[in-house]
Amino acid sequence: PPYAKIFPGRGSFLKMKENFIPESKNGADGSSGPYTVKLSSPGAFFYRARLGVYIFFFLILWPLNQHYGPPFLDRIPVSHTFGNLILKMEVFLCCLIYYGGIFLRMLGAAYIGGNKIWSPSLKAGEISDEGPFRFMRHPVYTGSFLIILSLVPLCSPVGGGFILLSAGGFTLYLAHYEDIQIRSLYPASRETRKSERRFLPDKGFYQFLILEGFSRVIEKWKETMSSEFYNLSFGTGFLAFSLTLSTRYFWYGFVFSLVFFLLFILIGKTYSRTHPH
Image 1: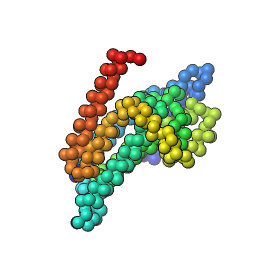
Image 2: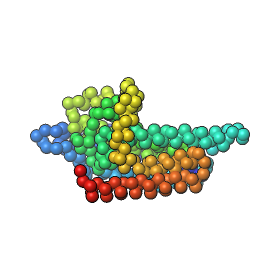
Image 3: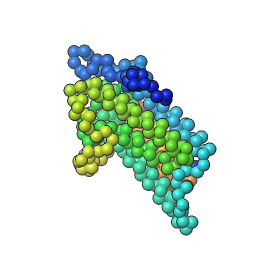
Image 4: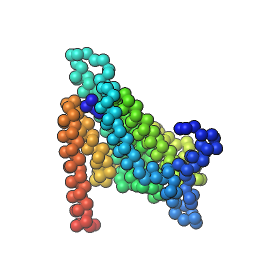
């Protein structure tokens, strides 16, 4: 289609959890020195390699969509008269959800820095309680989850189920890994942080977006765009597809935007080197 444990005993499970999601070696800041992650643990390995893991999941998704029937949206009965229009509206709705996910990721990048979103390890200086982090602990992972959800209706049933369980589950795993590390950094606030909302925003979030959030993303547009250029490029193709239902226009939009953003980033870095502040 075009849109394309083994259950161990209690003791074994606890040991496995310690290995995969370890506490910090040094605990919170203090005389023990700066915070570090146990780099040899599987949890730290997957955290460092999270981009590659996501790419691996989506490479598997492609053949699953090709071999397991039409996507979910094609299975919804619609009238023959308005079928094409209704299908475009459904795809466009998925596209809006996708862009909502990108915006949340850009919002997080505007406050902690775009390069820190893909940082190979979590450090004290990369933890923030400003901006969207006042209202939800994981705005970036919430954005990632929205992106994944927006793609499910465009996949075959097998492909949609796979990407939701694999990429969605991996996103939850990464968020839980960060929770463990944050509690290691700030043990004094352990109980307070347990009560924070992880993925759904608290009261006042939408007012914050109007008064501060949107303007902050615009103000930091170079950094946020550099962080999310691939997702933005895919989003351009997604939008073109929602308007035409043509995979050809999806690839036109995606490739053109990808080249544009890569040239933009390259020219920006070159200019920064030749014109240092």
